[in-house]
Figure 1 (tube, rainbow, N blue to C red):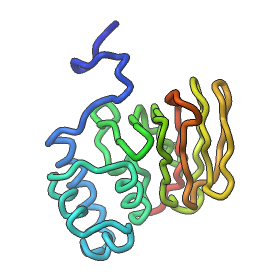
Figure 2 (tube, helix red, strand yellow):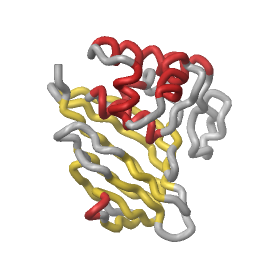
Figure 3 (tube, rainbow, N blue to C red):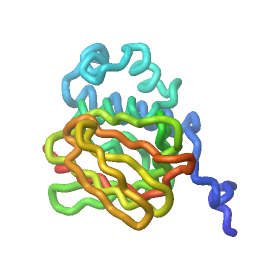
Figure 4 (tube, rainbow, N blue to C red):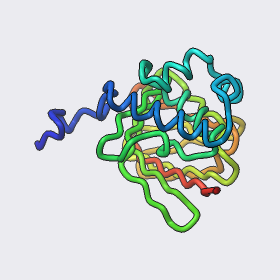
Length: 193
């Protein structure tokens, strides 16, 4: 097996957050926030996170969770990838039940598509906040069984199956049973000026 950056390729957790990646994400958040004329307090309030948490992210002294990054990206009306560095340097984003590693970002006209390697860990449910209007997610399960989709209308997806949903409302990810779910996740995000 070939190692990448000193990691065992069987390690599904991906790259770890470093001081450099945390600082890079912090700079991107601060730049997008100031471009939109939002104060630190206002963005924190809109995203439903603490002002100290947002300040720590912007200064690079905190490693963000998936929930926090999605809440911030949603309020800034940008894809999650806009808060991360290039795919080959982006760390794995950890959430309550998921580990997501950005593999690639495709831009096709006015749409940005993010491709993630996703692991859904058993024993917890990941609730992701609403994305911007028009965002659609596409999940393909390679192993395990998942319950995914809008919170009010989740569906079961087994190995070899695919599901998609509009994700402009809260949506969830959970592994059914004791095995983790290995999947790919495409997120198509209409771009605005």
